[in-house]
Image (cartoon, rainbow, N blue to C red; front, side):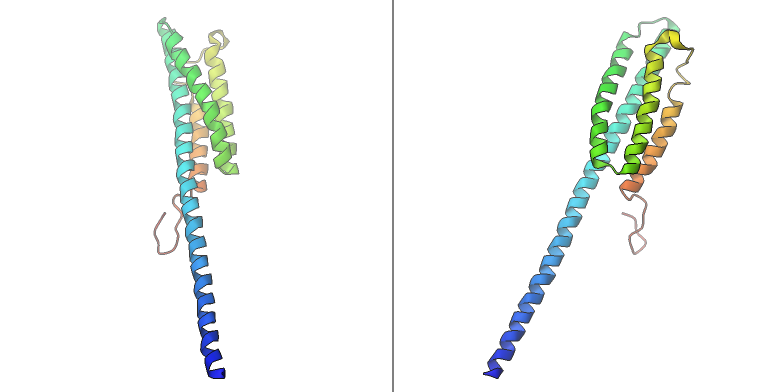
Length: 164
């Protein structure tokens, strides 16, 4: 009887070991798949947000330059306002998906962009030229870029000397 129980215990132990090893491997694979999926979504969100901010800055510059030439600024002003509305929506996605450092950096971008847009909306408020416009926003965008790269672990090594 003992000669039959020992192999049976061995089979049960092997099955349990195989089950736990397979479960662990599947769980790890699932986590990696989810992390990759969210990283792709985060990257898209960062790119869309930054592109929209740059679009708003470009339209603000065009508005100021049109005023300097004495031309109609209504089209570029409309583009600027549309970009600002879209930026507001994209910011919510960034806050939901990004880490705290990226969210804080994006808030600084927002504040600096609002200042630029306020100055452009009120042409009597100051003598801003198109070239001067947006340099503080660009500085804030550089900080956001750095935070986004850190959040996405871009440039960090993961064993074997290769980057992800």
